[in-house]
Length: 379
Image (cartoon, rainbow, N blue to C red; front, side):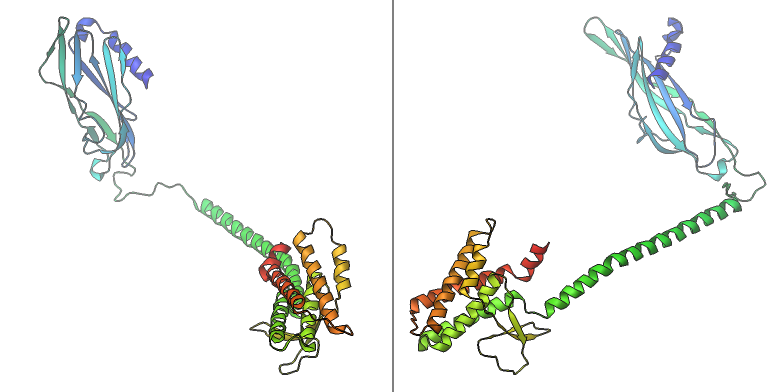
């Protein structure tokens, strides 16, 4: 853009000074094309050069030349811009770019003019060092710019024809390519579905097997909860009637189950019918709401088994788990001595402390082996 302005300035400066003084302002039209079709966008550039020296300055009113304010009917203004001006010796240049188009059937085959413009300006002269003289209002008339409007159809045509050059061969080729893409998409989708099924079948089998195996046994959390409840009932019975053989036996059976869960020993489970009695020395555990299951559980874990399991723990096992096993070992020793010694010693404080520790371990096991904790640990 600056190169174009510089070329115009060179032409102006080549004019003798006497001729330059006649025109304080000079403007030119420049069109990107001399002929357009209906609806075709083209560019028109307005370039003006004004005198600007130390003694004289020409000030043009550019407020009416902006894209938002200028009118160029019958042409429609699509947009435009106003680049920065340039100064060359005694001339200052400014430009306005307009993007136009014409829509109107009556203009086909005729010359349509970009309308003439009236550009107001004033000449400011400087007299002396500080005095300035402002001239009167003057107007520069910019002549119209003719644009030829071409026709897309012959003069005898009654309507406008489609200018597309698409043939039946091209249409058939596009249809064939579309069909090929559709077949390829269906084939890839079928392959993806087969791969997905092949990947999900082993997973479904594993889930079914694990689910069937899990449904045949009671979850640890249900067994631990029932054992803790059994200990609470035995302790309540001992508070009323003292530590009888029945109360001690109930507590010992529950503590053995809790100890088996703590050292991960298998627990004996037998399914019970709805109204079947619970065998002696076993706990009845019910689980499930939709698919209810009722079974009796028991364990033959002894204090020695707990001690052996505790001695095999490595250093990575938390200290709290070691304390749990030590407390369960002491509880089994106390309950076994209270039930099977020839002269049983049933100290209420010792037995109550054994039950308290066993219930605490049962509650910890119930929280650790809940459904969410088990799923998270497996992941």
